[in-house]
Length: 131
Image (tube, rainbow, N blue to C red; front, side, top):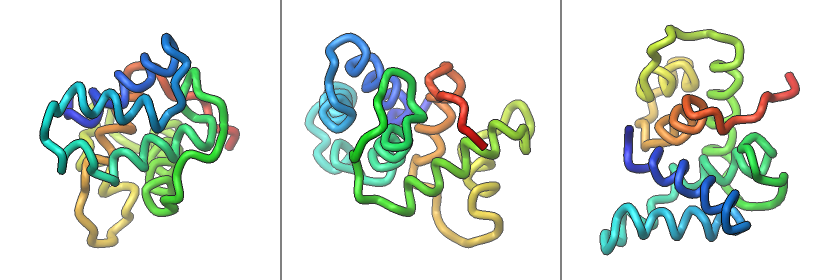
């Protein structure tokens, strides 16, 4: 499990148990995981992936709302959930493989976005999309 996936899972627990908003929950979880590694704590791509899923009401225990201004990371996350729901992958899909499916040939580097998606998915924290 990737550190950003761990942060996403911890954030959901903070939301569930302490009624925090997704941004606060992510920030607290990131500090807990990375301690004093400021660059890792502030890394935007995985954070905005999580917040984008929250914004759409796709993360369990989170109400739809306005949590991020990121368009691309939110879009990547939603597309990844669609791929996962439609079983367009092998059962043991990795974050990099899922990223390649999402990008559909576009050359862009993976930046832990799919670790967030997969860890939430694999731990049952993703709500079904209304496709």
